[in-house]
Length: 72
Picture (cartoon, rainbow, N blue to C red):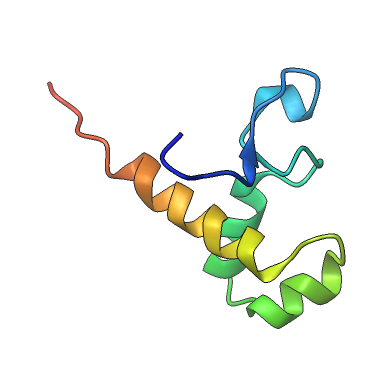
């Protein structure tokens, strides 16, 4: 999927939501933390299993998802 090798989907993990590397850390959580002012360093401190590339890819994936065209 367009080079998003850290974004995974598994119906048995978080109901199939887009997650980071099969962990119970959804992309939406990362995006929400950034939107509320958390820095990469703060997020990594709170979620030590994450890597900086996970956060970058989560944001890139979110940008890609919302760039889809909607036709009415």
